[in-house]
Image 1 (cartoon, rainbow over the protein chains, first blue to last red):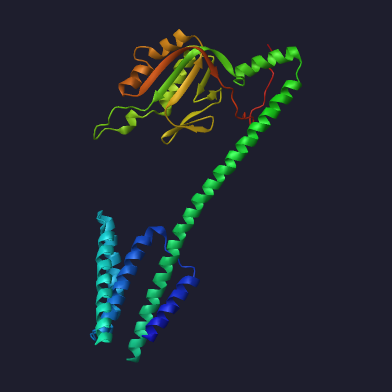
Image 2: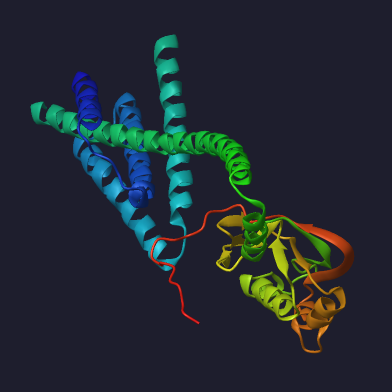
Length: 112
Length: 227
């Protein structure tokens, strides 16, 4: 847990102090990738609380989910199907589901 | 287990970088809003400069009047009339043109129902052929170097942008001017075909403002010609 938080803070520092920006054209892909990554992270926290956390599943999921989401949105763009919103809604719903589960698990743990 | 911790840390670093980059990109969008504010500021500055210009023009006019003798003054006035630098008063016509009010059918080209610079040009050309002595579009005097040009849904005259309706004033023989426009197969008939609203008013007296812009004299040099 400490490693995760330390890594997150280090990443934010790197992102803020290095002049990395996403061109406006790729902003859509970036937001989809970010949402997919967030989904995996919340899924991971939930799995840890349920004691079913699997490291390789988590790490591979983090990268493949993001890349697949970007790839699908890209293909959709090429075919004229706006999969961007579909990805946003899908991952958004999953993030909220995961946070709800995390809340339930934590409540159960501390009230019992 | 030790490897696992590092893997989680690495994943977190990647997530952190993505979050920060996304945050910065969003900041960039807000900076665009500041640009809009800047546009507003510039508009205010433009307004002020315009006021100053009006003031200076008055000053210039006063100084010109002071420095002329009568005979020169008369010729000066004639030349200024020809150049479009004087306010002109007299009989003439007022032509008002507005976009079509015909509902556009699906699949039809909406462009056909809008006024274009060419339509205005045709009207102006017809008026000139009909003997108009002074012309203005939306109170903008037309002189020899005036342009009438399409700039998106608007037209530019003397570097100033106008939107419909366009009011074209012409001083000259009322009947001749009206007849020139209403010619069979002429400009009014063509425009009315597309439902463009065009009306011609014959007036006993209309006033056309003088040209207030600058003259270009960057490349040409005047030369006396022996007769």
